Image (cartoon, rainbow, N blue to C red; front, top):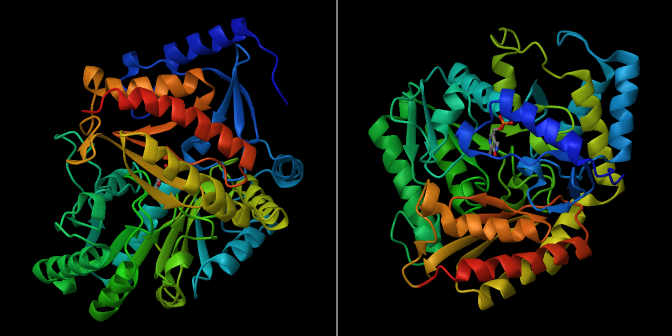
Length: 451
Ligand code: PMP
């Protein structure tokens, strides 16, 4: 329902926020958060009554949009019957959520360990890998995001840590493929794939295979730029991991649950990891939930020896009831198929058409409702439109791009020199086209900063 405009309440909400809320990823005095009055489907409203089309899905989690009535009702019903219960008990919402997730995860990933979000899923997956193998090191990619807890932020390969933020023991980074800014100076996908696999093998050889518990990768790295891997890469990593007895962890926190037009991004590549992390889309973020899907071989390690880990709210009934309702809604309404169709027929062609006309677009990448536009100063040199971690005046071109989009009612996802186009999986054709039209205007502003 469209909320009534109420600027006075909006101002009070904002004042309390500024006085007391310490925001993530922010210089506290340099931010100006929008006060949000309500949301529905693909849209949200501020207290002035201005409507925004959400091309961010929150933080890429509202895969079925805001306030889906069936999911809201399921949460209300669960709250009325059993709003909370400790994780050691069998609870209908929890066992049903685990069954629905396990039925959709690839291969034999049939046991589900629940967490409250993605970072905790990554913490537990890497811990399981260490316990299972008896080995200490975890290999993860530069240009990756795995969460902001202690190990997860150190596995994360984004260049965003402060120098005094000491690393976690046993984390080793390697380069995953990304042809547009190839770490291997490759000229085509086949070369990029071969060189990336050789580099991973070399890293393993120099670190010592017997010291490596796991390789963790996002199936399609999200936050770092939606970098679809070249054909054969993930299958190659699977083969290398098998050869050295290394656990292969795929992080599907962002790419999972329909975002790429399949239930999981791994389904595009026919690979089954040993552990798979998920969160976000599992219940569209209506109540915090994440987890690890575990292979039968790794589950066996903990069959007669306790897994020495757990969380007070693991598999919280409200979160699990939301997951059951979300997955059922996704099936009933064909939402995964809708994401694939919108990607193929509207977003893919529409974004490529924009790239043809706007010199600021260096590359369009993606699938389903998971797209990135890489903005550049110069298409020839591929110099990014703004430097990495740009701030202040350095960031002006991206800030101007974002302000133009917002002025025309589109809330864009902006990270460094990229805008990610990540609307809900059930975004309609009309909404997707509305967003593309605003992007067209905003890109004209970015074009002014090209050479
Ligand atoms: N892994 C990936 C791939 C993610 O995209 C994210 C969140 N953006 C996380 C882990 C961390 O999830 P959370 O913020 O729920 O801890």
